[in-house]
Image (tube, rainbow, N blue to C red; front, top):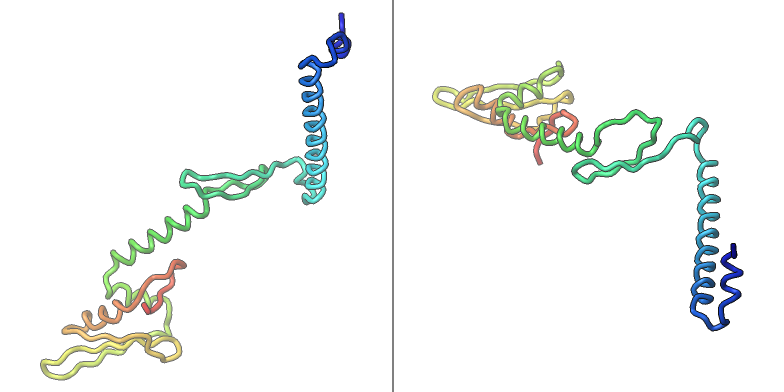
Length: 171
């Protein structure tokens, strides 16, 4: 049985198979060099891994909405954080829309003994006036209404729930 080189040696020197074989050998050489460089780069990167991670794979995951994140095979796997944050922001927007202004004002007071709402009345046939006072005695907002609840609600209309669940005055 003849080797490939013996078979090519039998061909005339200007035969196209000789040029094709030379091109293939060149491409194989390029591929081997590329593979050698990739192995060296892989070894270099593995040396940078912390102890205990040399057997792990770092993966890029993508959720159904296209958000990508890096993770490793030995890490606890969680759902997409971007989707979770977006869901929480949407829930806060929905809570803002569902809560009455009065409920927002009451939420602002809840758990803060130093905060208060001062109510006053304009006299016979007058309106109620509410002023919210924070821990420093500053008034972030005030309101007025026919009833005390309306005046407090008017103050609450100036509040918005932050993404972290705290309240702030709308700008």
